[in-house]
Image (cartoon, rainbow, N blue to C red; front, side):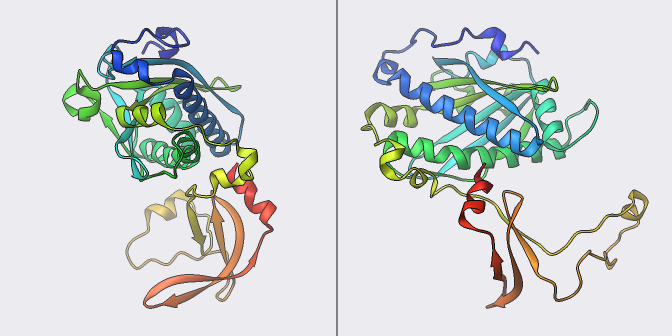
Amino acid sequence: MTPLSDQVTPGFSPHRRPVADAVPPERVAGLARRFAEAMATVCTSRLGRPVSAVVSGIEDTTPADPLSREPMPWVVGAVGYARGLAGTHHVVLGRASALALGHALAGGGGEALELRPAHLDAIREALDQVFGIAAASVGSAIGRSVGFGPAAVRAIEAPAGLPPELAAPLERSWLVRVALGGADEFRAELALTLGGELAGEIATAEPVAAAGSRGGIDLILDVTLPVAVELGRARMQIQDILKLAPGAIVELDKAAGDSVDILINDRPIAKGEVVVIDEHFGVRLTSIVTATERIRTLR
């Protein structure tokens, strides 16, 4: 696959339709940079090593035009708005980039030669985190709170399988290209669509006050983070895992009655005890880390 960054001159390509002149390019560039920053933050956290994300190009075009130059198969992530706006963002990776990113996020060693469901799951989980962080930036750009639904990620082998928004020749969109890189020769490139409704919103939105005037932390108070409760852990040999069957018992590293761990962004922030509320499980917190330490889970 030809690297995306080799095909795009950094900056903006000529406007192809008069409607694009109504959209301030600097606002699109600002959102693109914030998305790249969120991608770098998530990848750095999940890979445990520094990862950079650079906006390598922004085009005012139809996705069907520049993306048609990318050989298939693709991996496409679709992330729709849950509140504040309508529509869907699409993240497109060529096979080589999807393989590199998915394999790294899934914690695989060596070199991956084939895309597997675990790779797609890892990319989906990363996109959920990226858009959870980016929601605050989008909200500040249009002056109201927005939220995203869960990401859906799938491999697409042929044009017939594309979402309509990526295949329609007249669907106006900004296309943002982002290059990921790390010191260990990790490289991946992706394209992000910023659709017509969002473009129209940022064109007419009044500038929002700077973060400092809102107390800084207010900008991210509506960001959604995954919360998990961990009952315990176990280490098993592969031969024992293959012997598992319904009814088998896996012994955990905690004794009955021990506190369970509450994790946010895969980091422990509290301990608690399991309770039942109206036939649903819940957790009563028995101890929790300080507010300062909880803020660190956002990184």
